[in-house]
Length: 203
Ligand SMILES: [Ca+2]
Image (tube, rainbow, N blue to C red; front, top):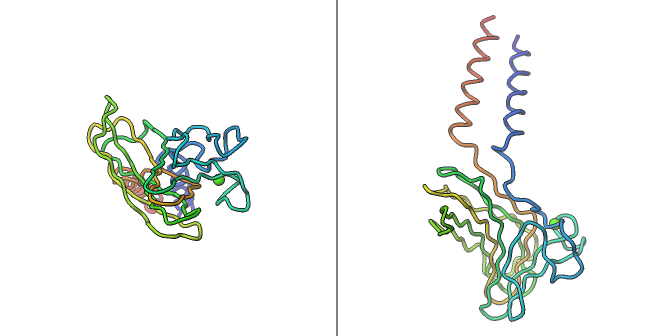
C-alpha cells in the first residue's frame, strides 16, 4: 500500500509540474528562432529599441560563443547609450510572484547589465517597474542572474526587459520567467498527500 501511495503521489506531482505553474512564460527564450542574415536582424517574439547611433542590439550567431544553440543577444553601446529589448506576457496575474532569470556576461567594455519586470495595467501604464542593476564590471563567463517580484494589484500586462547601458555591451541568452509555486499550489499538494496517506495507509 505504501508503494501505491508513493506512486500516486509521484504521479500527481508529475502532473502538477507539467502544468503552467512551472512553465517558462517567455517564447523563444534562447533566441534561436527567427530569420537570421546579420546581427541587424531580430529574433522572433521579442521587441527592442534598435537603429543607428551609439547603441546597438546585435543578434549574434556563433555556436562557440552562445550559451545555448548558436544565437544570443549582445546589447549596449558607447558612452552612456542604453539599449533594451523585451517580451510582453499576459499570463502573470496579480499577487503572483515571478522570477526573471538570464544567463549574462559582458561582450566588451564595462557596461552595466540589468533585468527589469515592468507591471502594467489595462491602459498600458506602468504600475510598478522593478529594475535591478546586476553588475557594472567585466563578467567574463556566462553567469546566471535572477530577480523576483510579486505582481501588484491591477497587473494585466507584464514586460520582461533586458537592459544594458554604460560603456560596452552585455550578452544575454536562455532567459526565463517562471511563477514561484504559490501557497495555493503547495497547500494543494499537501491536501492531496494527506488524502492519499489516509486512504492508503489506513487500508
Ligand atoms: Ca541561444
